Image (cartoon, rainbow over all chains, first blue to last red):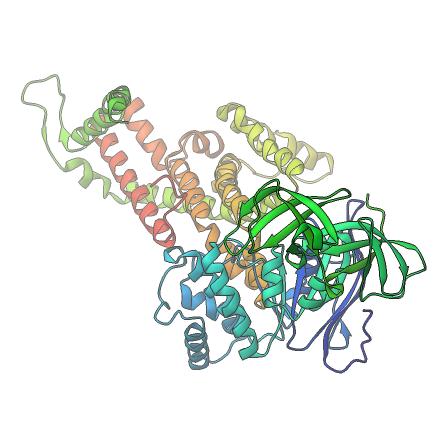
Length: 354
Length: 278
């Protein structure tokens, strides 16, 4: 996905962004673009460069080289206070010496808007984030979730063209996090602002995003919709990072025919060399449990764990240990068979991992 | 924790013996006249305070407050940027710079002030250089400016250190957040950095103003034998004139001024954290 600047509703375009700190490469040629009103998520483990990428867009870091195009202009040299971009910081970074109203009004006061207008905007924004009547509260008297909302209100009230969010839900408990995920997504649709979201939580990324950029070791691993990324991971890293998966070596005999685990399967992938070595990804929930005699793969259950919605079983076959998610429970040491439909067999080019 | 309460007794005893009792004594002496050893001579009086309202003494008080305020403000103007510069360096440079600030404090206070005498004196280093260059020697010492210089030199670290310790702890993301919301460097300083550093400023203000108001060594050495600040006045009453009553009364008045000064500065410090001294 190179992406041309000529494309119509492009708002930000990162071109060959490269960054090193004291000789250590943090970002290696990052290229991606963001469309207007898109909810884009930078996803990856810690240290993958996602926060650095976000900070470059926000203007808090300068890349060593590369271009950052915002609405057709390179803004690498524009300081953060002149960018039409606002940020929700990881630990909120609310001003402790100001109350809720003053925090939210900060950006508007800097812009020297008339007092009435500031008041109206702030009150409306607090209403939107469900903090009506909190105007005079001090920051330290708020809960984590409330501080989070103030941080979002403080950024959104400036009507930025792009909102950057740096793991904004990281400090919240699971239930609140789920609520806020939906709320954020709704908010984004309502205000029609481009969101760039950074997280290491793959589930969060899948729930909220229009587009996910998966990063690792300063490089982009895959760009795509949540469905694409989940169903068609480009490599083993993505497959492992997004959800759980069985990754097994295989050989692509010809288009739509793959061999793995000592059997030949039909599949839906094509475009590989004849007899090319590949990696095959099968999600644990895509393996169906059948009687031993009916299975393409035969194996023995070696462990079973109750996970709430399903059981997680490890099934030992001759060639591989399979992770299986199923609502059917099989006792340990039961001999079972496994089947998988062609649609659920995902073929990736084999990469030598270091 | 309750069973450890006895641990505080030595401290309480210490405080009573060396802080509370002397304070009470000073207080008693300030409101009495006469010799305590002579029966009937020792009696209550507000004469000592009335005596202070002599223009002669008021002038000394005015001059002392004036100089103490001036030196505190100069320390603030010099010390704040210094603290800010140091706090922005990397940890290695920072520690070296702080060390450079602290090292002179390991030397004797008197010695450091004498050093200024040899620098500023009529035949001192500075005038020696001026004469070498062919100019007429100047009068650097034994005036207000010399005393002011001595105060600023001696008390500057007390302004820099508390401000530095507040700045170093400040969350950088607050500054980034302000920039993100459209504030340029000046506005970030005025609206975020300075207000959040006020506890350090108040603390520094206190730590410089107090010793500057009560000093008698700096004024004696750099101001000359005739130079009178309130500290010298008190010293004179106790050591030379022997009027402990009047000396005590002046001490009480000076304490009142220090307390007023602290009350005013702490008004600016809404947060009430890190102020420490008050």
